[in-house]
Image (tube, rainbow, N blue to C red; front, side, top):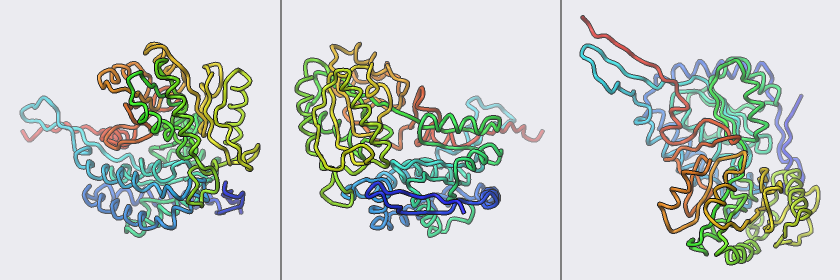
Length: 461
């Protein structure tokens, strides 16, 4: 029997192992989903919402078990708790707006004798392929609105966070969600590709690498299913001369290094106006040195291991290349288990960097950041746009209009001012360029999880 083994970054042990579903089991799950979805589509939206909120409460009730599970699975320190603040905010908001977001759109030019409107109908069966870095937050972005919109959901979670899918299943079962509407499946890559190409899935949402997104598109080619792809990122920050310095430093250090830098919208490169460059760099270095790297099960630890050793080795390679090309490393934190082949990695701050270095061009997804001095807005905007990615960009200034004007010129999905690394469920979550396509959260997220269907009704004559 083929299995998936979850190797813990904490100590290299096998923390969990699960059998891969058989092809027959996968086909049966899809058939159950289709049958359940037909009845679910007739269920009032308010009733659907009650199930979602019950699931949320069931999930939150497992917090004491889930927090150490996350640490063992992907390395996030237990001191930060689970992800349920964000899960609660996103679930509650998407339930709250569902009726308004999903209501029919009436034709704007009434005509006597006709009823004309567009309904937003369910897609059918939605496959969610979720990542390990924020295993609950990223999954809930699609699971809840897809179900609220009237579809059924099949979840394939990352091998690194196998137990998360089971927790979602337990929560939905406890909430009493009708059988078949949500199903957690353990599948390998070949099975996933086969399912995508089968024509039995109506929409797939994938969060992961650019290469993974291309594989999804290839597997789904010819099926005409809709796709939601959140892929790579290299999110920039621009610190202007009038920025509130202590606020910018504290928030950008956190934005760069929280979760060991394993954030889709984490800060990976910082551009600082020359007038405040030295002050900013000095503060950023001092703040970074406060991190305590170690076992994530220890309450004193503020940075745990990366999810896998190979991810940490990539950061080591980016740092080494940057140093060879003239960059300067400022932290150089010494710790016994920070070595090649280990997932434990201390944070690093680089200056003297440029866009000929991979650390400023290629996704790092780890605890390393490069800081560059810029002379003006033009130079900062050009550098921010000099990337194949575009998820978020943050601008640090006291001038809101100026920040918005800069944001208009930055190629990105979200513009932040004086904050970073956060998803507001009232705003659409989307990206440009190689970061992918589609949209999640907000009312627009519902538009991406439904199909428009026009009604042109001539009344009795």
